Amino acid sequence: MSDHMRQHRLGAAIRVLEVMDDFDAGMYPEPQPYFGLVTQAFVGSANAEVLMLARSCVDAERDLRDEEWDALERLLGAIPPGGNLDDIFELPAKQAVDALYAANDCRWFGV
Image (cartoon, rainbow, N blue to C red; front, side):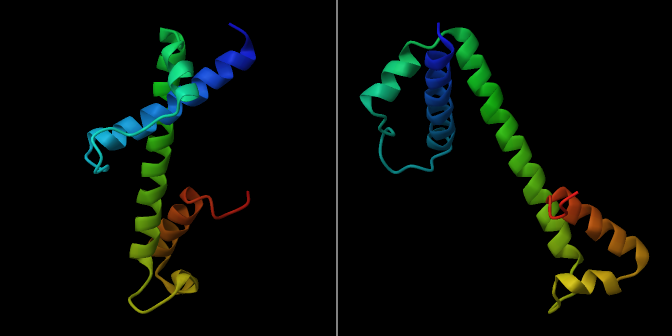
């Protein structure tokens, strides 16, 4: 299988897996999400290795997104009521450090 074809099969499989996970969770009102014939053909011709790689990509992306949401919740929870992001620097040291770690986990620092 050429790298170009494998890339297309992987991309199609990732799109299908992302939607199917959401479909299985009841996020779509229609009975089945629609995929074009090209996407169906690419996924239908993907081998087990490509499908496993696609599943790993989808799972890794969801894990990262969950971690980022958790960090954002921690950061927002550290801001005093009615305050703003700059107010974290006025917090006691332990709370400020926790908030700064959360901001770093949100990838808000360009380090």
